[in-house]
Length: 407
Image (tube, rainbow, N blue to C red):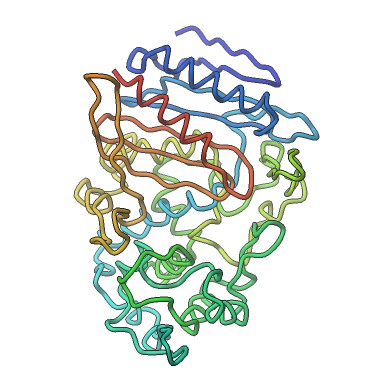
């Protein structure tokens, strides 16, 4: 295929030799997705974004629109480096499961076997006679950590628990709650064990520092720092060359600013040149610390679609990935399903008489990044931008449009 690239401040259409025919996704659906994305930028609601669709191992659609810095005007491109925040969680979960395959742990192992402080964990209970702290009905298990059923949050919500998070320094910091706690993940795990859980293990889904705790467990199981083990087990085999827990100096000219909305207008909240993400943090966050590119994360998604394989490298066995894609909550969160690092939904693809539902695996990030993987259709989609607090409406609309065009 001839390489054709068109650049503009409003939009970038990129068709390269690596981009395959869009025949597997109806052209009218892709055109509608393109218009939706461009309209979001032209309206002033979005600074810049990229939408990637891949099927059968080929990139069938790639649209980059807008700018990565509303003040400087540099275009947002497919090689722009972004903060992926909680899209780190599935990567950390995959890294952990490579150690599961190596026999380093079982899912039902008590966390206290590896971090003894959790042997003394308490659960906060509220009743007519006030607040009390009780022993958990069963030990906290590794499985609970993967599927956010530990009872540990990000420090908001219950005021009785909030004071413990503040006392232990386990809170995200300004600006806009973008920066992690100021302690190592080893110390953070010990701190978390001193904070009362909001419910008994496995009882409910509570989003919080769970995958950061998993990152510390990876260090215990592997005997290596989290960043080093993740590079060895996941990032290098997947050729995720722009992904890590900081932005190297030679790549900072591709790093995006992060934006927010103030008085109805876009504003820069974290400037790329001075961002703390450049040098990284003492808190190496398995729950939200990675920077990446849409192309790098596409390699991760392709591995998920292909049952754990990528370019001849086996990152995970197919049966391990199937386990990660199986609901672990067993009704603890009502109809919401979550596996070992992934949300699970049934989504409708195609339209009209040909419409049918298929399982989808996904998650999103605080800076409004999202991905969706549909292995049954050999399909994945990613939308990235840099805006806090998280806003996922645009990504959800784009995903739905593309699903209607699956042929």
